[in-house]
Length: 161
Image 1 (cartoon, one colour):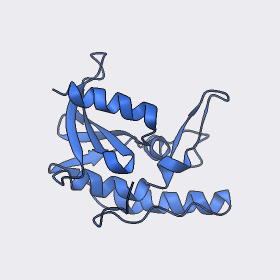
Image 2 (cartoon, rainbow, N blue to C red):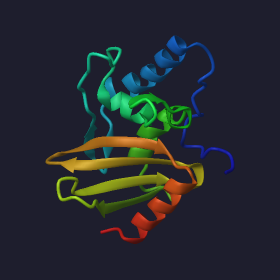
Image 3 (cartoon, one colour):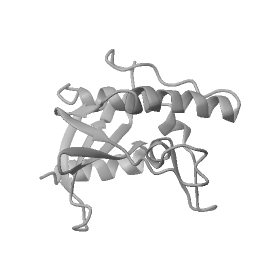
Image 4 (spheres, rainbow, N blue to C red):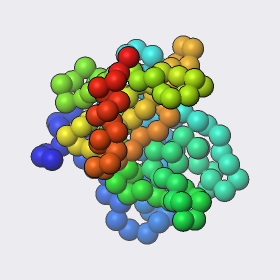
């Protein structure tokens, strides 16, 4: 992996105390997704705005793009590789026509999941998933692409609809 493409902001610095890290992450989320409209192919992107009692006042959509389920404890825990790439999410959604980005639709296994849109910055190990819901895209998740996930994404890319 080389230098970050010029159209992307730098990775987020996640050094420091948890409160500082959380504030830094949430400030990016607010700026890019709460205070401004984000679009993919001219269609507005929305996120899960539900705030659970244990969610520290933050939306579920936020937690899904900066954390992952830890099977040992059954809770979502910060995923630093995923979280530090949060500033890339909006530019990836809005720069879908760039050669560095793979964008495709994939029919997920169960009918209720339907066709999802994958946005993958393959050489920089970051991917987003959107789901079309009537007149908007719903932001399902974003994640760091490890070697296992890379194989799965390549398979899905080969089977795109």
